[in-house]
Length: 240
Image (cartoon, rainbow, N blue to C red):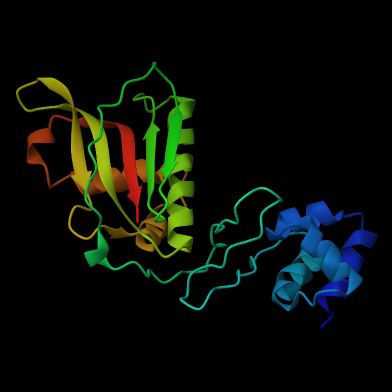
């Protein structure tokens, strides 16, 4: 089998740039350049590069390097920025290292307000590694920003899974009770030990709107008073 260096040189001969090769493999173009020069072996990219050379697409995304605790290793950021944990490639599962008994105290949350059809995402990263994310979405299923909101939530979950974290939080739902009255209320999820972020990621990664479907599944059956209907309008995700 050809080496990663030989495969990259073959792709460049076909007209691929380092940036395009990196994009297809989910890697930085500088790494591709280093492998092309022989400065790094790139053995973990060999299968994906072979698929790209032979078929024009990557069917087996290369797994990322893990740290000693089994979570994904951070990737080096550009100068002046903090190194981050990237999402795991498709098929790579990460062990949850946060214990359910380590769930932090729930912080008070204000009722979400916003303009009609507005998508917003606010992130608060605390020094101890805890992250608080608020995502508000329009309540109309047909709204484009609602699907985009599901993607934002999926990205938060993917990065939490890559870091071996757990997730709990509050879902804000507009509900219609059996008596016909409506209200916007908070619904707690993951209140006793949270959810493994990896298990949530497994449930939602293949469907663009799956974040809403997953939440609906958590609410239905547990809150019979909402049988008149409910619509999720905001998420407060606590990553720990």
